[in-house]
Each structure stands twice: as structure tokens, then as C-alpha cells.
Image (cartoon, rainbow, N blue to C red; front, side, top):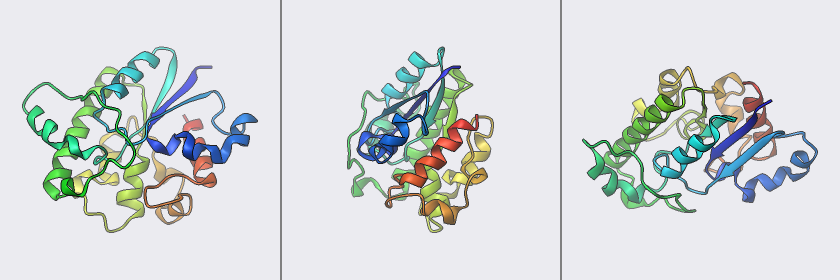
Length: 203
């Protein structure tokens, strides 16, 4: 059986995953899994591409995709990258890296559109990875009043990536999803980790 390699943001970071230490130790949750987490890592991080590349041959790869606006101070760099072949930035982000001066609609549109280009490229290279849009579900499905442009909402994205996505809608309702998170950032509580574990084991 292949190891399950899971890369993502703080949602699987030690600061939060410690809630289920006993369950992991006893093989009840995330058995045969490698959890590789970086707080605030943006979608366009070169590290994500490199890590998927390193693990793809020997593991089933799961990517918990970050929010479009993580590390949004990269906006100017990403703006300069448009109309070039550049996609990635050498950063792993850091906690608290969402800045209000880069949250206008034009910022979200560019960061979101660039993020989709990155995802498209990664899938072209690694077609068998599985995507979990946990942050986006929280932001645009569980939250009924998201300010994100509609073409960046979960329901649109899940159709775009229907061949790779593990669809949260198949496991929980938007209303119940909120009961499985600790905070506005969507970090899982214990029942949230059970949900995430069930999603990963469904593939």
C-alpha cells in the first residue's frame, strides 16, 4: 500500500493536529500518512511543486489547497509575472500573512486567477494527485456571503477540477461543516479531523 503524502497549510500543522495525538498514535486517524504542513503557505510556493515532485512516484499525494490570499503581499511580484512563463515564488509563507492592504477585489482576482494557473500546471505534471479545497469551502460555501468573485467559489472550482477533487459536499453539508472547525480560518476541530481522514481514505 502506498504511503499517503498530504501537503497543506496550518490546517494539518502540529499546533492543531495535536488535538488528535492519541488517535494518530493508535492508528485511528491518518494511518500510513505523512503530514507536511507550512503555516500560511501560498498556492504559488515553489516548495509545493518540489514536494509533490519528490513524493509523487512513491506516494498517493493529497494537496490541501491554501486560500488564494495567503501571502498576499506577493501581489506585486505576481503582477509582474503575468504574461510570462513564471508561476512559482520561492516562499513557504508564515503565520498571519494576510494583509488588509491587498484585499481589494483586484487583488483577489489576480491572486485567485494566478492560483488556478498554478494548480492547472501542477495537474498537468502530476495528474493523479487529489485536491482538497478545505479553505475555499469554508470561505465560499459554509460562508454564504463571501466577497470573492463567483468564478473563484467552491462550486465552480469543484466542477473545474472534478477529476481530481475530493468533494467535501459528498461528506458534509455547509451548515455542519462549520461545526467541525475551530475558528473563522477553518482549522479543524476533532470532528473536523475525522471528516478530513474520511475524505482521504475515500480514495
